[in-house]
Amino acid sequence: MPQDPAERRVTVTGPPRRTGRASGYYRPRTEIDEQTTLGHTYVRSLMRSQLRAGLTVLAVLGLLVGPLPLLFAALPDARGLEWAVLGFGLYAPLVLLARWYVRRAERNERDFVRLVEDR
Image 1 (cartoon, rainbow, N blue to C red):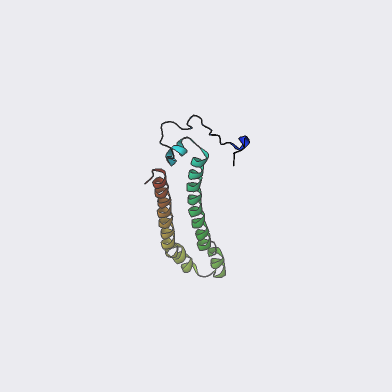
Image 2 (tube, rainbow, N blue to C red; image 1 turned 120 degrees about the horizontal axis):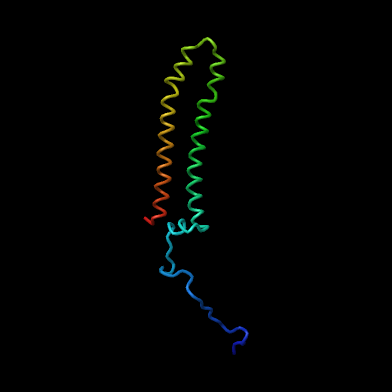
């Protein structure tokens, strides 16, 4: 079967788009430095994961501290209970919550650096 001249294969060539790099190789760090869409996506993913951790801490803190005024209003004659709850009962959970947040934020940043530096 002879091939129709309109269906002839054509090879399109042009200058290389990126010079100085091996083909198929990219670095996320370069994408971030050049502020490309992909680099913006990398940074936005880090910011979202940090925001998610912060909002989680805020929600837990709100659930932990929010009902305390209602509890204290329900028990007006328990001044010793108020000081015990505020002084001792909240301290340990707040420290644990802060520790969790710092560890989570550091892990997010470590994962981001590992992604950017191709490790």
